[in-house]
Image 1: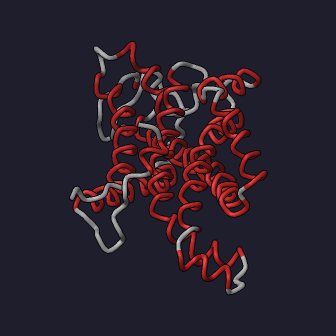
Image 2: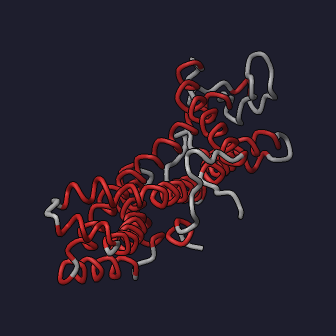
Length: 275
């Protein structure tokens, strides 16, 4: 199921806070607090090494233990959560803004503008998203900019396609047609009548896009083409610690569990009640 397909799953209204949505929102709130406040409360440098504490278990000195270089796992997880959450949020925002605006433009104007934008999106779709990211990363391996740009270029198409298709349907509704005939301008109609109709679908789409970005960032770092050590990135942390799984299995699992909780929170927060 693609991100665009997932966005077609109806989102529960704000008044319909199901237990699953409450769990998702609560989980995201806790993880956001950990990502935002963790690096401030944990005064330890996540790259500071102490070989005497190599693979130390959780203790009063290291609350979540230390990795093979004696670096605090708590500090690295806090910085890693902030990095994954922040980079995914920035990537989705960068993809959503042009995608939504171009989708609205195509739906409103139609004709040549819509055909030109469709052709452009189709050409980009023909290039696999992962390949596009890898091409950009080849110019500057391990850098933040190409990774962020590659993911944003991949994700904006989903926002464009969903916005264009949904807005085209909404614009055909009788009350929209009546408002256009009465002379209301496009900015007012799009802002007041069309965007509120699109908001639930776009919210779901943004959550799925963030999940995709978090997994992509971790996966690319795990295969050494994304962010690289000593940057405290969750996927890179798993690969760094994997050779020491027999001695310290908990250390290997912690970054993976954090990625799982981030994605789970996003999925639950946009989950609608089965009817």
